[in-house]
Image 1 (cartoon, rainbow, N blue to C red):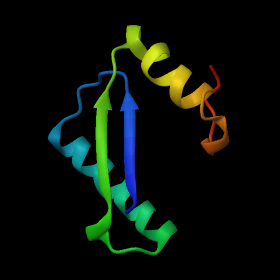
Image 2 (cartoon, rainbow, N blue to C red):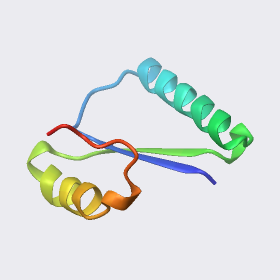
Image 3 (cartoon, rainbow, N blue to C red):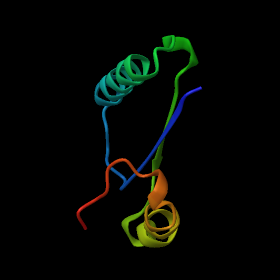
Image 4 (cartoon, helix red, strand yellow):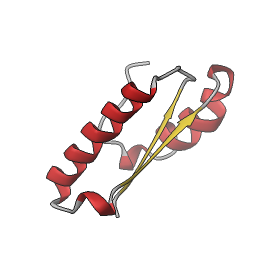
Length: 74
């Protein structure tokens, strides 16, 4: 614990960009939860734009509003 799961439109990230993202997310999670870097896990899941509403927006944003800490403006 904790685990961060990021769903996003398919975007080509270089190995360097992905490494920076993971490093910065890990640092933020460590700071917020006061945990060791070794217990943080991060998943990146590309979701096609055509599938976004069905796979992400409806079930995870609309359907779980009580868990959101930042809402999208779309």
